Each structure stands twice: as structure tokens, then as C-alpha cells.
Image (cartoon, rainbow, N blue to C red; front, side, top):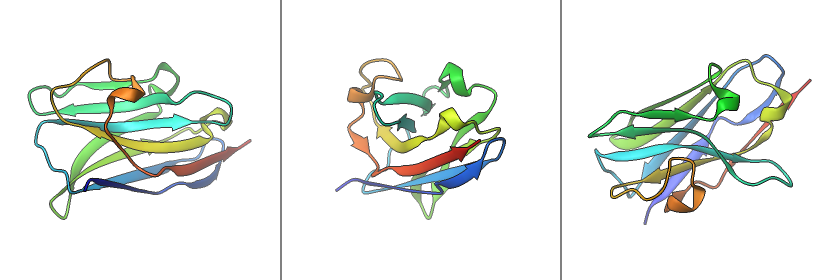
Length: 129
């Protein structure tokens, strides 16, 4: 059974930083795409950042976070992991952040939420002004 477990959310003032982490259990592929989506109350879930690993190393960011957020991947005790470094946070970044994972073949663009089969439980990020 695949499990994505997130950590690192919290509350911070505008201009501050947070780092989110996500570790995948029961799922390990050298070729994959992993990343983050977020959802605020009353809004649709939106893609934040996704990194492809394996045959290509493409990285995609939402326009609203470019230059402020950095997605990276690694290994945590032999398990696939993905991280999101968030700097210069703004109140509009307040949302529940979800870790996502997928393995080939991929369907849809990087920011199509319904194309990701694996999701974490979500971690809250609150940015105050």
C-alpha cells in the first residue's frame, strides 16, 4: 500500500520561510514525478511544483511561486522523498499543501491534479501579514 507522509507545515509571518517534506512508503521508482499541490478554502486544487526524475529532469512551477519556492527530490532511508523549500512567503500562499507522486506512463500536464494516483494527507501552511 502506497503512503505519502508530509511534514513541515506551520504558521509563519509574511516574508518568512518553511520547508515541507514528504516520504513515500510502498512505492519506489527511479523514474517518477513527485511534487506539491495546494488548496485554499473555496478554491480549486492547484499545482505548485513538480519534479520529473529518470529519463528527464524537468521541473515545473506555478507562476505565482517562481523564484520563491524550490522543489527537490531525494532519498529518506531508501524511500523516495520530495521537498518544497518556500521562501518569501506571502499571505496568499496560505493553503493545505499536498504531496503527489506518479510513475510512468504519465497522462496529462504536470498540473493536472486528477492524473496523480498518489496523494498525501495534506499539511497546513498559514502565512500572516
